Length: 204
Length: 269
Image (cartoon, each protein chain N blue to C red):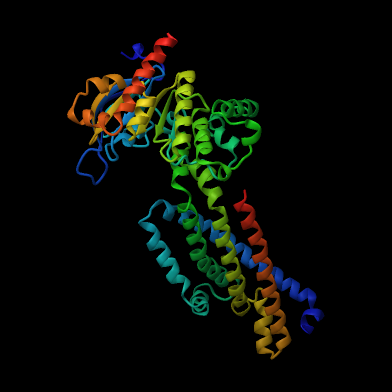
């Protein structure tokens, strides 16, 4: 606790870096997951293959994946960024598929029959109703990413993980504690925020 | 040929559909014509192809051979999305959009067609009154807070909102209880007569067919057995199958009904 009160600006700066890492990775992951999820939702044959592959990737231990990525990209922001994008895919894609395929088929039939184009069916009927489940996926992914992003301190010198890993090398438990507490607080805050968004979307 | 047809005329010419992977045609060589604000019931047991036939009209199911003319124009010549906006569509499961209010549901097609806000609001209230619901009470409700009968009334209002050329109804009253069903049937007859919109109505319920139809198309295994007015179907069934179908169950009621209807029509004229 002492480190947190004696170095509030340093912790805040690293927390900001942590948030930046997670937010950019989450955005990039969504850019990838939305088309993947839509393709899988439209083609029932594709979904098990895609989700199976992403699920298998998800089970690779994060340190092992990072070791491979560091060999490819070197130390720095990139390997941890890529690792986060890769890990998030499973959770995001799975929930997009579940959200879209979970929409009442009668509503989709009615939407088509009344003369909505395929894009209008997606945007006006399927997506608004899938939104709570999609946000649920974003929430779970974001929390996992906040935790995995601490490894960024090890491979890239970014985020709250810096405090944890420096604390380990310098034998400074106060630093480790400060980094861990800040990361946990971040995760709890994001969880609460996205839960709220989820509930909002459900009553939309 | 095309010039003679009335507005809202649907003409099937040897319409045939075979679903991929099936070894028989879902509908085969269907030929008949309807129009002029007629209410035509497609009647037959489940699996006879009546819903498939209905869904060929708005191109939810494509024909494998033959063609369908709507007001004289081959429907495949038109963009399917634009075609569907001109044809009302009501299904048994209703399919009201759960994230929209009643008013927004009814406004779907008018807003797709780019109507102005005021025109839409006015039309929504007009339609709610037409289907017997108070606009003040129902306008801003969510579909989750409607009874089955109310939901299907909204389904009908949504289908006719943009004054379609024709109306397609796929067992619309199959899921509501008998009292509500009777009320909805009565109102449908009134609405179709008022709007003069040619309507194709799918059912497996013989009594419902007799209650609603100007003409009945009896289907069996993808083929049309007979197209006739209810009275004619009753008195001159074309096949043994039609005879069995129209006399199945409580045909005494049907006799009474036809008699009463003939009397009523006579009084109206």
